[in-house]
Length: 371
Image 1 (tube, one colour):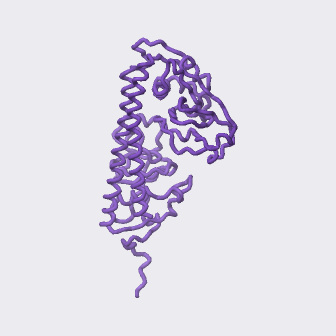
Image 2: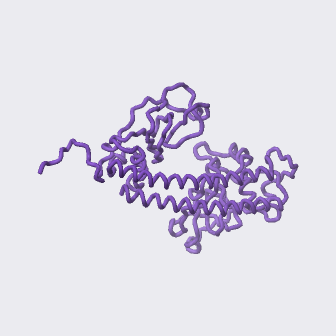
Image 3: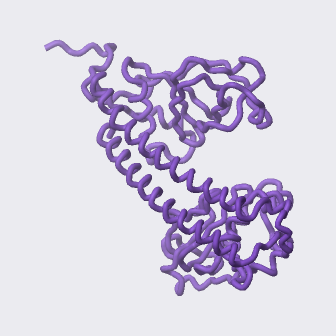
C-alpha cells in the first residue's frame, strides 16, 4: 500500500487541518485610520477591530480592500465578520483572511466563527488561532452545512431586528409624549434631581447575610438598553469590598464611563458594585421607568458627559448627578408612558428568549459540524 503524499492537498473527508492550511492572510495596503475619519462621508464601510463602524472614508482609495468576499478577524475583540462589499480596514488588530482551499467561503467563515473561546484565551487571539485545527468536508457537504447555519443566523438577525424595532418604538413614544426635554415646549416646571429622586447609597459589608443575594457589577449591565445579564451571587463572586443595596424600586446607574449609558431597572433585590449608584425615585412625583428612559436620553447625556471626571476612566460624582435638572411631566402622563414601555419590555423579553434559543441551536449545530 502506497503512503500518502505529504505535500498533497487534504482529502475532503472531515479530517482536521491546521489554521495555516485552511486560511491565508490577504495582502493589502492600509492607511492608518483616525477617529475623526469615521465621521467623514464616504461610499464604503470602515471595519476596525472586526466591528463595522458608522460612516465611510473619503480620503481617496488608499486602504480600500476590494477582493471580496473576505473574512475579517478582529484580533483584540475576537469578532469575525463576513464582508461582501469593498471596505476600508483599520490598521491595528484587523486581519483579512481568505480560504486557502477551494470550496464554500461561508463554510470557512462559520468554521472560524465557531472556534471555542477557551481555545484562544484572552489576548493575542490571532497568534493563538494559528494553533487551532479545522475540519475539511466535501464541497457538497460544505454547502449543506452552510445552508443550515445561514438559515439559523438569518432567523437570529430577524429576531434582533424585532428587538431593535421595539426599542426604537419606545424611544419614539417617549419623544411623542414628552417632546424634546431641552426645548420643553410643554412648559413643564424644571425640577432639580433631588426633588424627584435620591442617590440611595446604603453600603453593606455583611457578606454572610447577603451571600445568596444577586451581585450586579457594571459589566452585567448592557449598554444603552439596561438589560441585566450574567450575574452571580455575592458568594459566587467572592465579594470582599463594600457594595450598595438595591430593591425593585431602584434604578442602577453606572457612574463609570457614562457614555456607555448603563441604566438598569432591576425587578429583584440584591447588591451592586460601588461603581454604580442605586437611585430611588420619589414615588409622589416621578415614575421609575420614566426616569430610567430620561436618563438614557441625549438630554441627560448632554448634561452629564462634560462633567465626567478623570481623563483615563470618566466617572460621574454625586454632586454632578445631583446638579441635573429636567422638566417633569405630570405623574399620570409618566405612568402612561411606563405602561407602554412595560408592554414593549414584555415583547422584548420574548424576542430575547427566542434569540437565545436560536443561538443555542446554532452553537449546537456548529459544534456538531466543527467539533
